[in-house]
Length: 398
Image 1 (cartoon, one colour):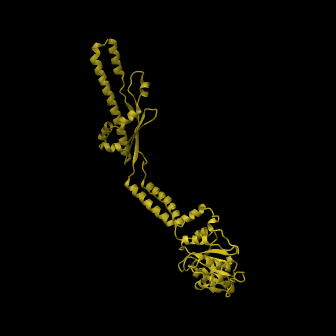
Image 2: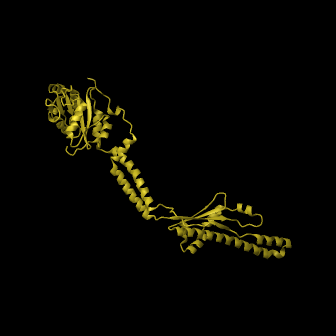
Image 3: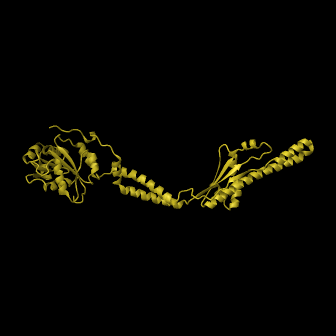
């Protein structure tokens, strides 16, 4: 008798489609929902712990003091890296903090100074809890920076004037006139605020609704991932599609509350729609499952739909049949319905299955996935033996 020695692992496994993956996740939808709720709550907590912040920006055009026609070269000489450092220095911020009535350290923590590449534009950006506070602080810092810069230039100019006055007696009239003209025409313009900070309309940070949404979205993605992992690593069989994946065969369903109709559909599948196994040319049916009790349940259901001429071999009687006598015993009592206990050896079951021609393997959602996989890996039915996996949609009454 020719046997099918090709194991399940050697059979081609159908690819996992998007629809299949979605169904696997949806079977673990409680995990997805749990993650969404947890992370939405965390988002709400984050939103409450970190209040909304508003960002305002004042824009300054930095001018280098110059005299006469040297203005263009003076502008190009502005070192914006230095000016950024000065604008963010403690001296400037202390003056601004005094005007604002706040601590200089707090002001420094909310300040960002940035120069523009290849230009003399300087941005003063301040973040605060209200739009008005942000705009007021940015403008105050900008003004404090310009005042400091102007004061520095004025002090330098005053010092220059003093030096000219102190040495004027030792100079010729022409040299004195040139020195005085240079001092008089030297500009103390330090720059100007070309764009005052305005109270922003929108928050620079996430609102409560946004943090909740971000949390829920994060939870959804993580929930989908862990739901898929949970589905693929579950110990129980769980659902009929998984049985189909393991067996590589179409699964027959035993509907909860409608087992008799399901059994009749099962007989149609094996070619005995009227329940007469002999008429269908079958020696019998062998029922086996590694899950305790399920083979007994299916065998008793089939007893109610097969023809009256079908004999029955229960699990206890099956265990007493010697392997060498299995084929003769079944043929002598055919057509026969054989029930094998969950503790029976697979080799003994296969002897009975090859003799009857049909092997039904019933399972439930509680059937251990590992034992199901092991069983199908061990099966080596003859070429003429039908092997049909059966799934009970509910195991409540088993």
